[in-house]
Amino acid sequence: MSLVGLLFVFGGIVLYEMPRLVREGLWREVAVFLGIVVLGLALSVLQAMELLHKSWAEIVGPIGESIWTAVASLLGSH
Figure 1 (cartoon, helix red, strand yellow):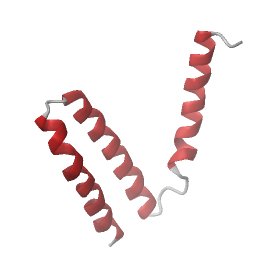
Figure 2: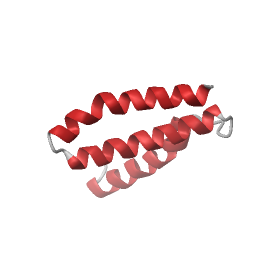
Figure 3: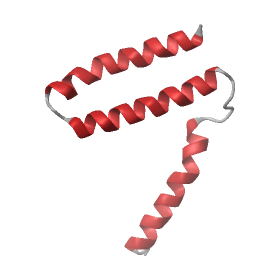
């Protein structure tokens, strides 16, 4: 039942945001938006099925830290 609820919530978000992006012809934003929605839906479904026991922040955090370290080394830390 929680999977149906997830589909309704994510579907509602897409129905609310998508028409304006398409109407204004913001195709790159549509692609990024759909990518984020699909990623969020996938992580939510995995958590609802109890296959994923970490939060998204615990998964993405180390990736963000490595990107931040790389950017800081490129810009030179003071």
